[in-house]
Image (cartoon, rainbow, N blue to C red; front, side, top):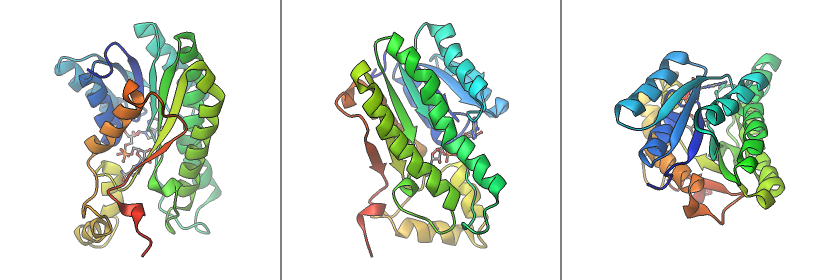
Length: 255
Ligand SMILES: NC(=O)c1ccc[n+]([C@@H]2O[C@H](COP(=O)([O-])OP(=O)(O)OC[C@H]3O[C@@H](n4cnc5c(N)ncnc54)[C@H](O)[C@@H]3O)[C@@H](O)[C@H]2O)c1
């Protein structure tokens, strides 16, 4: 039980990576606030965790709205008296080259994927400091480290998440708050599925993408959740400001 008694918030936990993280954290003894702007899937994740005998509650929030994120942090403290862990996972994807990206698409993506991480940290950190420290895990991407010609706004936001992670780590390390990021490669989630489904031959695209990986496959959500568990737990007690690459060897290759 690597998170015994800890109180954790996981955003975007209605499906995909966030759902896997919320489930694994609960299995490891955490009390988990499952946050999503999709009430149905968020409530279903919390209910599944409870049905398995673990502790979770659902909280509605759109991570791009300050008041809702502040209320989210308050809900965790209100329910369980403290806040130890925050996973900023919620994000959206806009598949668009730079010139074709509209100003509205750019603003919408940055407000969820980058401002959402800022707001999560802003309202969680004071609660963590009050409790003597904490751990924040920001879900970035390999696309915060390298570019993708079709995902200009997404890459920019994920790069921002990595450097915001480092800035926050420097500011709040002295008060016992560790802040790290994870950079996954492709992960088998609804977000990735939607990307593949948009191709003329989704199966062929998946196969082509998988062939780029040293491990010749994409990741499962659980494999990213294991990395998040490591960064949220005391096993990573001397890590802060890191961008942990979980990419099956994708970025190890130049040609
Ligand atoms: N799937 C991949 O291949 C992949 C690769 C690298 C990084 N990531 C990152 O991992 C994280 C999770 O991705 P996923 O593939 O599980 O995505 P997903 O789309 O399958 O799930 C995202 C969840 O976040 C919720 N969400 C979206 N915007 C929200 C908002 N404003 N407020 C609250 N909830 C919101 C959605 O309702 C959904 O439940 C994201 O940060 C994504 O950028 C994914």
